[in-house]
Image 1 (tube, rainbow, N blue to C red):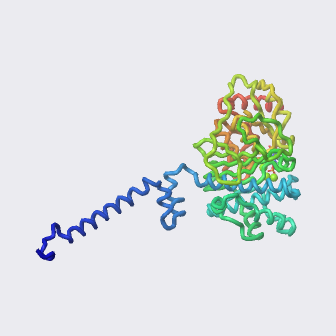
Image 2 (cartoon, protein in one colour):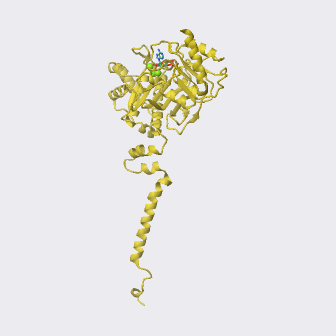
Image 3 (tube, rainbow, N blue to C red):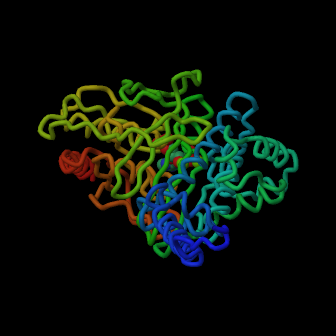
Length: 417
Ligand SMILES: Nc1ncnc2c1ncn2[C@@H]1O[C@H](COP(=O)(O)O)[C@@H](O)[C@H]1OP(=O)(O)O
Ligand SMILES: [Mg+2]
Ligand SMILES: [Mg+2]
Ligand SMILES: [Mg+2]
């Protein structure tokens, strides 16, 4: 029988249609299952306008403020590298400000780097930062020294550096960035608070200092990050007075972070992106017996009232001497249970605490199980401008003991009147 005469067993046209339908079903299934199999972030990142889509649409499935936390941590890490370079490599370039407090090339450089990262990632956000560039605009040498540091300070991994927006264009852009921190603050919208070096006196002594960044939304602190290059990495290390030991970097450098409602963490302060930190919490001390409590205070007698604080400690039955250290490292230290209580009683009735000196620390302590108020028992009010004009002094303690500490503070202060 001729081949042409053989009757086909099935219709080839029908077969092609079957295959086409089957192919379509498999394709649709693959598209539907891809996000489940490989994760929504990977799926979205493969689409055009990926970064826009991931930032805007993934916020519903990622924990709140995860992008802000990620950028804030990297920005603080990078700025901390700059401050350490200033300490080890350079003359500090101390300049006196109008209020007679010192500022160094490290303060200006760290502020420029942090603001550059924030402007790149959150261009619509307002910024309240401690320093301004006026002095640098009239001092070419100072400007160039800082520019030299800023343009050559980078994180170790290229991806993280890129996430922060990479290099600043030139020295003039650096000055403009520094001046972007001039927001008046307030209780509307998103405002970042920056202290590029908190505890400048501690920094100059080789003691404690902190690179501080907080995000407030409608006056409420949502994200707080503190880089403390001279604190021990070990959360369990005993708290020791630190008035400036010029310690080596070995075993030192810790990054504290918190997001409102998500707890507080610590992790080593490195030059690369890192996975999540360790959860930290305040020590639980029996509120009826604070004999074993450790309390922290400023090194500077001009910043908090050492005499009043000693009387309060005595009233509470605290037997150990206070641990004196500079900067918001005190907030981080009590948050991880290395100390228990931080007292900052006013020296002068007229001094207004600045929001950048407390925003990150306040959140980190509260997320670690603490309570932070002023001497009247009011929560710190970050929503009325660049200062805490509604508050006087700071009392930070484990939540269960705070009322008792506050009562002792008020007894001592009332007895003085
Ligand atoms: N008269 C003052 N009273 C309280 N705090 C002050 C005073 N002058 C400066 N500060 C700020 O106190 C903080 C240091 O506190 P501490 O003594 O606990 O380390 C710093 O932010 C410092 O500013 P700066 O950021 O310029 O160093
Ligand atoms: Mg200062
Ligand atoms: Mg400060
Ligand atoms: Mg400062």
